[in-house]
Structures are given as structure tokens and as C-alpha cells.
Length: 322
Ligand code: MRU
Image (cartoon, rainbow, N blue to C red; front, side):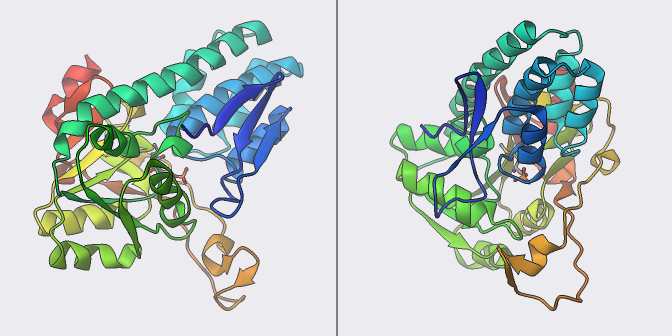
């Protein structure tokens, strides 16, 4: 299994996801500064992975002698949209020494993989033989401590011998689909093809697409899903073509303090992500580019939420809350 987050020799070692698929490089975080840099600059990304890395950030910060409130604030500001960082920090609010922090972080690293395996277990039955599935962004091992959420569901079905095909949205502008999901599906020997994000609606029209499955960064109390930019458009297209649209995410992705998705703070990233591929300009340098990193998919588009507790419908979310 791909291990994007490892604790080695008292430091955090991350797969440097900026370099994939060309190079499997590692990025070592020995300080809170380095760890915050890794989160903000997408060395590591994906909501569950961010939460786990944040827990190690609390340890590194305490080890350096920072005050816990200052550490929490810095981590919360690295990437504001995913609920995982907020969740981890709220569960670590009483932690104020490095020993406690490292025990918690290591526990979380293992628990996250377990949660994902359960998501896979509960979700796998929605994938049937000969299905064609679309996924967006990367909600795989690389976006978590291991195994993945949406891709975890696909892996569990594949391990059960189900034969299906995946259409992978390339996921502009950071290409989490073509760089990372494609890398993982090759690794898992799951059959797929990459498509441009803008091809997804047409592919639904001309191919027999049976299912869309994505992850989530935050889910509001009413079931609105905040996820990688492009998810909303995909959901609208799925509705038009009567394709079921599933979201796979751990229960801590639900933020019951937020009534609807439009109240979630959406991260806007640097316009260079759109105007450049690595250092190569692909747009006029003077052009403006607007780069919201996430969008809001209203609950009415979602067929079910696959969690480590089972599959919830929108109307069933109140049970999880209770
Ligand atoms: O900007 P990213 O790559 O961190 O965004 C990731 C996503 O939007 C994922 O779909 C989401 O975090 C779920 S990952 C299991």
C-alpha cells in the first residue's frame, strides 16, 4: 500500500505529491514551519491526510516549545476548507505536551487507515460488474494515511473481484486526477482512462456511466458537500443523465456547526496554478485568473454518503449527528 505519511526517526516523512507521477520523492518535516509549508504548498493534500499531518504538527510545534494556541492557529490557517484540520485540533485542544501529542498523532495515523477500510467495506456493494465509474480529484491512499475514501471503495470492490472501469477527471488546475489518481489506479491494477474535466458530461451522454464517486473536504449539517472544484458541475451533469452520485468520507468531515455549504470558507489559490504548468507559462502573464480550489455541491444532488459507519442518505444525517 502507498504510504504517503510516515513517522521515521522522530520526524514526519511525506511523499512529495508535487513531484508525482514523475518522481517518488520524500519531504521531511522536522519543524512546524516545514510542516505548514508542506500543507500550504500541496506537498501533502487531501482532507484526511491534512488532519493526520496537522496532528504531527502539534507534536513538532510543542517539541519546539511553541504555545499550543499559537500552533493551532498556524495549522488552521494553512488550508482553511477541509474540516479535518479543525476536527483534529478540537480533539487535541487539551494536549499541551509533546508526549501526549505524539501518542495521539500515531494513533490517528493508524485509525485513519482503519476508517478508510470500513468506508471501502460499506461502499463496495454499490459497484457492480461491468460498471463504468467517474471519479474526480484524488480521494485515494495519497489523500489519506492510506487506502483512501472514494478510491478505497473502488479498491474494496476490485479486491472482491468486481470488474469495472474508471473514468478519471484530470482535475484542473493541479491535476490530482491525472497525476495522482491515475498513479494509484495503475498501482492497484484497476482499469481506467483519464478524461478532461470538460469531457465528463459528454462521456455521461455517450458511454454507459453507472456511478460517480468523489471524496469531500467538508460536509455541512444539511448535507451540502464542499469538495474539489469541478465536483458541482459533475453533480449537475450526473443529475441530468440520471447517474447516482456518491460521496465517500469519514464522519468527521461533517461539520454540524455549519448549516449549509455556502457558509464554508472556500480557499482561493494562486493564479499561477492556472497560468503555468510547472514553470511554463500557458496563459499571457498579464491575464488574471480566478482559482477557487473547492466548490459546493448541494445535498439534493447526492445519492448517499459512504462513511465508516455505513451509508447515510441526506435525510439520515440527523442520526449520525445524534
Ligand atoms: O486541494 P486538495 O488536493 O487537497 O483537494 C482534495 C479534495 O478535494 C479531495 O477530493 C478531498 O479532500 C477528499 S480526499 C479523501
